[in-house]
Length: 234
Image 1: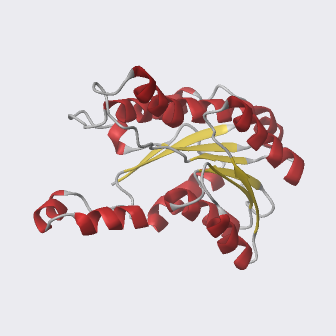
Image 2: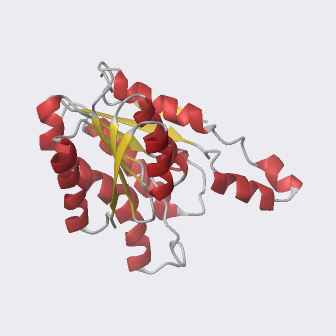
Image 3: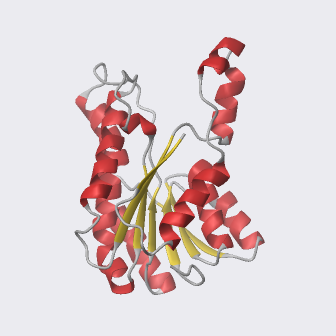
């Protein structure tokens, strides 16, 4: 896919992987809709400062109405939608399963699995009209078969990976792919590393560099032969 002039929605675009992905897409000529529950002013400034074009939609995507508004903004502002990057995820509940309440662990499932599924569903008409592509951002937590301290997050990311492969041929003209990184070297990861002891740092893998992640996203967007692909980054 030629990215010049294409319209991309990137969720979780305020910081970290979402910010880096949005800036990389803009660098390649895409017009980007920046979606986040937080402030995307920094991301917008980076894109516009480099001569790119973007618009901010501040939204809680766990709210169906706000998710619908996001897709509608892309259509109204830029006339369509060709690229959807479901990057928003994580969450910071007060407790984790099984200590978490059903509402707490359900909110993690909602953000990390239901939201990407909903946005994909809402975007399909526009994506189908232009031969668009969805890239889901999962996590190696959804692949590993070892104990994990956040079971609901791991389950959601496993579901997102399987959703990707299940959708590979379900929607004519729309490609659905997934990138599955381990820990990524964001400013938040750097802060967490700095707070660790030397022994703790030695026990964790080197974080995936941001350019490796964004490069994988761009390849899954740009290569029209790729659908149902799951790219693992460790």
